[in-house]
Length: 377
Image (cartoon, rainbow, N blue to C red; front, side, top):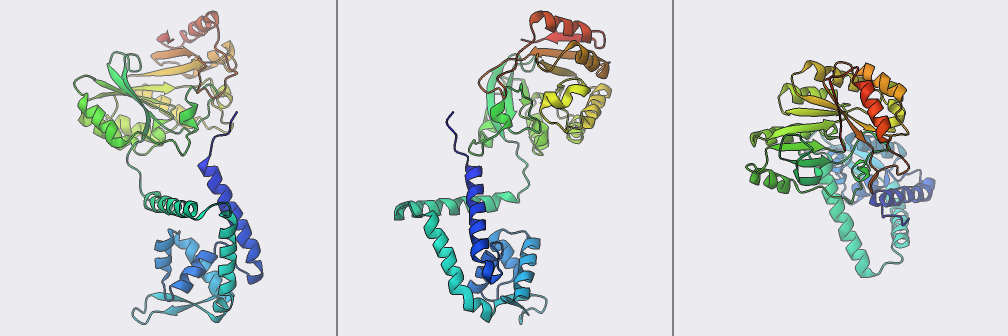
């Protein structure tokens, strides 16, 4: 299979290789790659403050402080009290830096020539502008608190996702689990070059179809892993939509908040298996199901309509753990069983669905513990 470009991996290789080169070449000067850009910034802007370096480089203040102290101890810089403001410190390079600065610039020049050796002048200019643009965007974005919920799929009309409602379906990206049978690999393993749907387009669609639709179904990925889900639900409620949320139950605090604030009208809790088989079924060996148990108790004691959804996979489910599952969820009103379906974006294509006879057996077992068991699909 042809390997897809992975910008994150390529960037990581470039960073680690650069670090390895600089650390080796600077070894005789007792300098490191982490100290180099700070030292050059001071040399080119004598009298600069520590805070200015933090702002220019987008650094963590603690990291800059540590490296400034190290450079001072090595004798490459001096820290002086500002004449204008006695509370401020100014940074200056010493004679030691000036002695070696040409060598340092040479090391930097040689590395740049090495990594750009197959590029012509135009390509280098394009690359430089491209990298500067990425850096600018990264700096402006990295420290922002994200309040918008980003969606990667929009199903404009559904008659089945939110039963009893004419709805649209929205899908978030990213998940804290890796269920082998998941049919949304593209949302679980979210590539960095896959862009979300522009928020304004989502809002425009919801606002323009308020008369045509009465419901929104939100799934993923895992919607509750995103802080912005609360603000989005508040926004959707201003448009008078009924909302059904599909979640794996591992974000109890956020689930409790949205139920308490009445931001959803129905919930589907995706239960993977009996507790003893949960880790294998969800693809996470060290999973702690305590949050799921808390979410389950919350739903049982709240007044919000909910169901439990179980995807049946021959390799993960059997009569013994279905019996255990029934005992665990006893008292729940509704369970929906859906046979595993393999498709292009399934994580593990080697899995199979139980046959119809086996599924009916599972249904019979669960009916001893819950009021209603439905089979979907």
